[in-house]
Amino acid sequence: MNISVNMQTGNYINYMIQRYIQSDYSPLIEIWKQSVIHTHDFLSKEDYELILSKLPEYFSSVDMYVYRKESRIAAFMGVSGNKMEMLFCHPDYIRQGIGSSMVKYAVQFLNIKYIDVNEQNNKAVEFYKSQGFIVIGRQAHDAFGYNMLHLMYSE
Image (cartoon, rainbow, N blue to C red; front, side):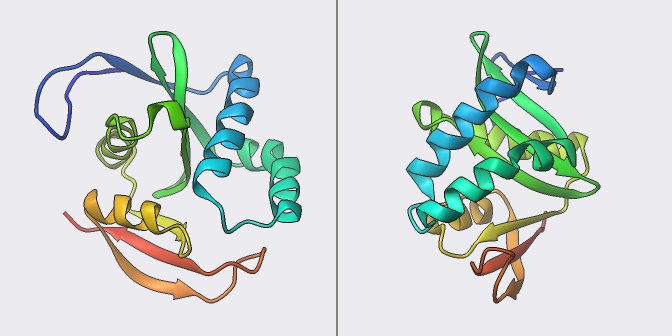
């Protein structure tokens, strides 16, 4: 689906958010690696490797969407029901409105209401708050022992 509004400025732009296809798999793995290295400095090397090994399982358990810019995948998200399960942007594209565009798409077209985020990932927490999400709860330890914040979209 072509989307054509920049949420920060209101100006029209062109990019494409599409459903994931199998040929997107390798670029998504690379985006995940680069994004996590750039943003998840709290992860141990062992947890990084374990999560990496589980990505095929995670990807197959959600509806995946990719953000294409100039025919290159710049970001991706996974959703399940009314929850965004993952959102990763390649570091080359961070702070260009891509994450905001994907969140807006997810809220408007996929009816996303909830997101969980690692509490230690301060930039992500602030990003989601800036997108209209509020913290509604906290989980002391996820499956990997990290604290998670539960957020809900609040128009």
